[in-house]
Length: 220
Image 1 (tube, rainbow, N blue to C red):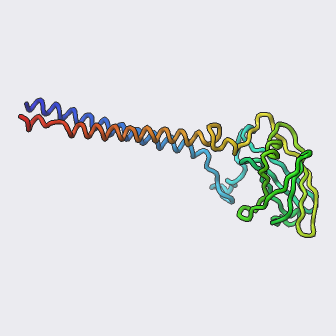
Image 2: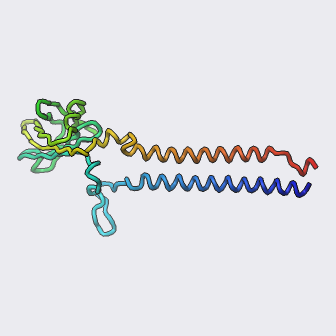
Image 3: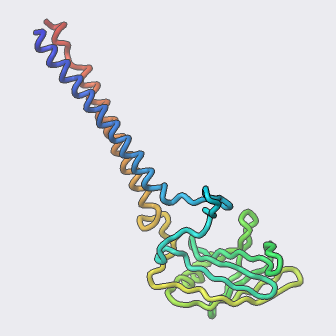
């Protein structure tokens, strides 16, 4: 009877250790997966420097296929940079001579027969156009000639720029929450964490079953 109890106890301890090892292994896999998933996307903040004084906040190296289409234009009065991302055209404008940001100006953009007024955002300091037809035309492959009309107080000017969209280019923000953008990373981490939770539940059930077995030594 003592031998039977010892075997039962050893079996229970073996299952307990196996469950613990599985949980630890799953937790390590989840941590490694999260690190691999999100660490490459870390970007240095503005003005960050490396140990040798190099700038870390420069333009990240990326494949042209995932670079958002952009446009630059300037005149004697103004200069601007525009970027198509997130289903909108975002524009930053400043004074050419002083680099002072142009705030709350009247801005409109023309693309062929299409014309749209840009909305100013105080919290960001940019102008944006989110008209679906206008943005869709901007994202069509090819070279798009844009005309920017800027009226800031008593100053007004027309700026021309070309936005080039390659055939392989895609709207990053349109896919940023999908399987084709950063979204797949969140799905991957979620799947790994789900496996960890299932393993923990399995361990808990095993523990309950083991503790619920009759004690052979007492029954003797």
